[in-house]
Image 1: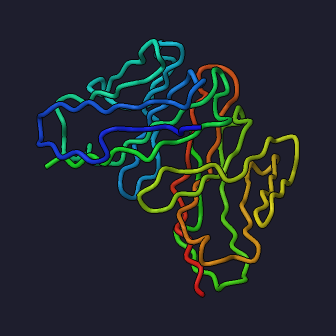
Image 2 (image 1 turned 90 degrees about the vertical axis):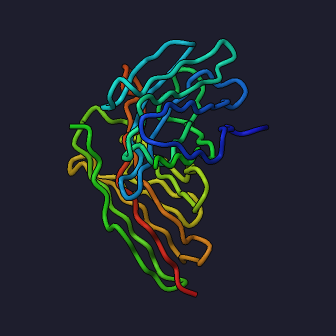
Length: 114
Length: 114
């Protein structure tokens, strides 16, 4: 069974640009979670999508947004990039309503903002 | 209210020794407590998890101890091996409501010396 996949693996952008990160969940999983892992700061919750709807968001500004498609894959969009957005962005998926149980993570997208 | 505090930040243990990592939480609505292991360049992988209705859970060399009254839980790695060298994150979540995302501790970098 394929795990959670994310693309691209690495990304370099400059301040003010916009970026889109992509995530494909494990087959059969309907929930997708996005986390930011900045250096030395642990994992911070960004967004949770289930069945195409945004269910919850963390303490991040509105320039962080996303969506979930009918096939349950998801995109994370970050507008007006700032230097402090440099981080590893991790996507996790779980079966519907499983919540914290059974969250499986992808390898992440490393974003560098110059 | 949503914080999970983890200590120590780093830990060095000799091969065959016991590694102990501690976490404390504040939100009494948390009812699921997993531990994740992360190797460099990889996403976190679920290691072991516990619900608050039990005080201890053991899987192989890994044991979670849980103290509900103190709102603390810990990971014990028995007979630590160099292959256990990784970053360990404790986490917590609520299995109901809108806060099903994981709230992570800040991580512990474990080094097991050969």
